[in-house]
Image (spheres, rainbow, N blue to C red):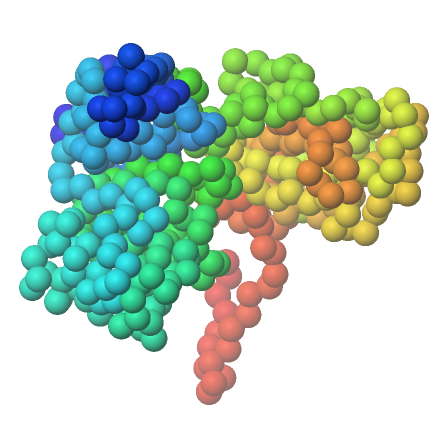
Length: 411
């Protein structure tokens, strides 16, 4: 258990969903029966382990059991069966403004919330300035929190929760509420906590954020764990599964998944070298063309073509679309080709996956999306950069001493 922060073993939790409720003894006698209800299995024999020092995410549709499991971890709810073992001090931010008294000021609520999380008054005194600075509420700290916006609520609550120096931090669906600056601070704080070998368990529907900050994810469906694995891999499989009008044409890892309404179909995706020949081994710095061949069964107005490139770990490298590039056909029908030409492919050597899509002009409705349809390997080219990353920046190095004494040695 030394390297496991949270161990969940065969946990189940059931709730009662009442169709009517007898509020008084008179109502019970008048009805002549007890209130009717049905049971809802929120968690059904759930088992998983959260490695220490990682950021572990829980995703899934509403009602799938994510928040219930988080509350069981925080000991707010007691499981009906199974066990949960948490190693270390735990801090939780599970609901917006949980533990705040609306009539008290922000300052008073810091002391109240800190006490709930196990901090003494001296500990809060020591951390007070840090909490207020992180929340960015210096001007409003003496204002009653009933006058706070939802964003101010979550900033204050989150700031208190992460500054109690927890070993395990539980966060439920609050990160999407903050503004851009607050989200940047959260990401920086997550990185700091991870560097300190802290463990974070987070629930969110913001899949882009989850892909970025999480090491592993668990996908919940109807109270059960559907899949556990690397964040990018689980999110890709989840998106392929939940898309409307999907057509599943994927292998067991979700590679090659496809979905869309089908009025337009992507017939092929080709990566062409500088001579226009198909390739799966382009060089860094080489001119390449990404070609999408399509077939439209009916006239489609203002379709938007796009591509996405992910590295082998599932991290999005780039995802341009033709609308951003100034290409929006007024109407298409039948067969055709759309090219994206790159004068220089600035990817460093490695393995990458290419996806392609066709959306409506609003970029909301997918006509066809082919995920990770082409895998290719970039080989050493020019510029030659070997110190890591995914992109070559190129450029030229130069240096000089102010007194002109610097001499350049051979590289």
